[in-house]
Image (cartoon, one colour):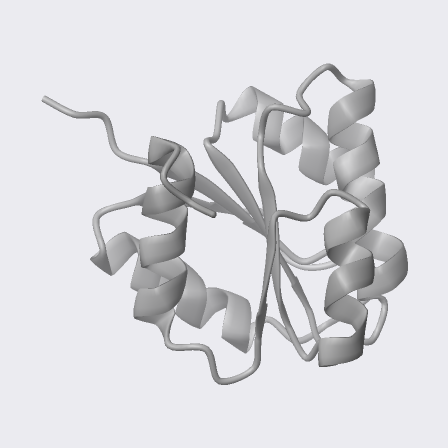
Length: 134
């Protein structure tokens, strides 16, 4: 029997809005994944530690506060510092298209902007974990 894909959904920084993250978490569960949600206002260190402790396949970050350019790379760096840079990081939320290349340069595998169908996110994660993602 195949193991379920384990995804950590996290809200880094002081962003207090989690409705989108909760919708994504439920959609990923509905697609057969196991989802761990860290809750609001997590530091990069807390997110990286949770990802390692929970032995996740993917970390998904959500930002609606505009702090994504500072916060997402910190999570990538913290995973690297802990020897867990093999855990891919994806992100989403209210992120301007112009910021996507910067985030990808900093090690975020993929950014999903507002309005992305949840099925597209689930499909990407499945492809990412299986090694088929571009």
